[in-house]
Length: 163
Image (cartoon, rainbow, N blue to C red; front, side, top):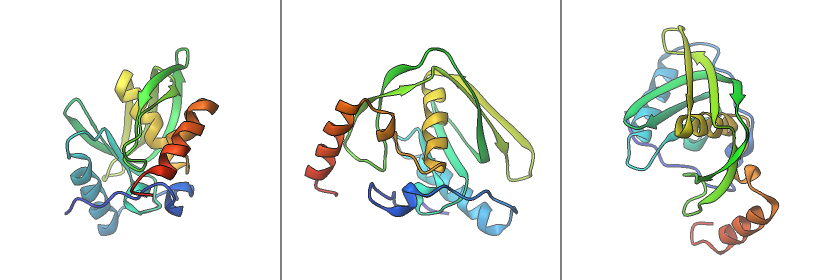
């Protein structure tokens, strides 16, 4: 289909809890194609539906060349001692801060055929799974920053040319 523009900080769709996808239809298939096209661009580890303006529970990922999607994902497991990891977000362009994430994560959802998908991993995949499910719950990675880093990030946003 097409690469869709990314919504940025301040857009209300990014702060709303996404609705579950009740029926797989042509609209949902088009959404998934757009998510996959949009995540394929260089430097993108994941794109959640709200980031392209759609308040539905789906995201795409691109981790080490492994590109895929999941519908109605639920974060069912995180493990390991939470740690700070460098993180950015397409919806908060130009910022990079240390966010607190678990080193292991697991999500369960479905594919376009209604079959269960389980995505599980460590490192960047774990970080992406947590980051993208946060988007579906109306949360940005800024909420995972220390209070001091959050103050710095908010100042950077106010001073940015895109805000």
